[in-house]
Image 1 (cartoon, protein in one colour):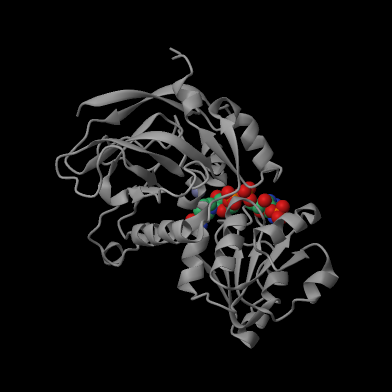
Image 2 (cartoon, protein in one colour):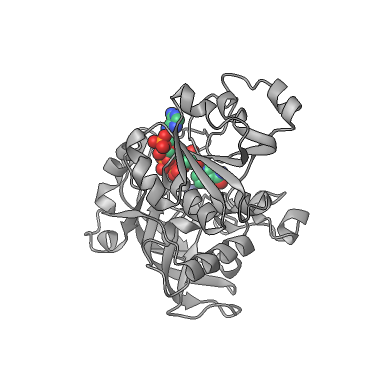
Length: 357
Ligand code: NAP
Ligand code: ZN
């Protein structure tokens, strides 16, 4: 297979900083779209993977799965895209497309395992995939999305992960006008959840540890803000919510949130992966038919639906544009919840950097 070398930013080990490196992109096969990357959002999952928080990270690791760019080449069988189109790539670049879940547009739950945009098993190279902190990417057209031209190309990038990860549960649990929705944690995912739930007509509450985010949360679409460390405030919303989207990345006590679910309500985990500590008390769940669930990104058709919805409703992410050279500082700030509300890398900063050997 012939390949092209491109500049990228990645890390050689879990405890090393990200730095410039070269990676290879395949030359176009029939269904491939070649994309010149303009912007890439910085997701907490990028940090988890770079630092091997979940185990299984492969190095060198080039993160990035909130990609927006321009089409610069198409394979002979590509029908949906042409050079010059503004497009996006999210968390997946491949799946079997034949299993029951793929056939139902649920590629994120592909029974044969989808290929992550980074750290996935690359069927073309037998190596692993490299993400969007790079100049270019080559992706099967099925996994390429159309970006509405009326949206800011940098600010739309986080829709590809932070947006779809919160949109998918909002849609699955049929949130509509008057639904009572709460969001735990105001970071990248949390702020998109506020905007999207608000746009669907829900009454929206934010649970946050950070009192200083209160006014901003209201501007983002929250009707109410509850400081989760304040027991009195927590008690004031007992038995209230139809749906809680919990975006907290690290282990935390779910029991106080279960108490705030209405009968038949569901708490959906989208952040933390792993065993719960403290354990869940099932009594309030049984007594109130309350559920705890999880949700992973969203399918390709659902992601296009969201991009179109964002185009119609003029919804984008609140971003802080950074240069690729600032990425290590950005990770440290993300760890301190010091992001309002998503870093997006301007890829011109990588293209303009001299090649390091
Ligand atoms: P983020 O921007 O860092 O936001 C996380 C927020 O959670 C913080 O702003 C903070 O909000 C709160 N928080 C952080 N540490 C906490 C702790 N120890 N205890 C309680 N609250 C805490 O992260 P993100 O990019 O939104 O990602 C959130 C999580 O979702 C990550 O674990 C990421 O890997 C995961 N993720 C999952 C999917 C999926 O498909 N399920 C997709 C993308 C990302 P406050 O200051 O308001 O408390
Ligand atoms: Zn992500």
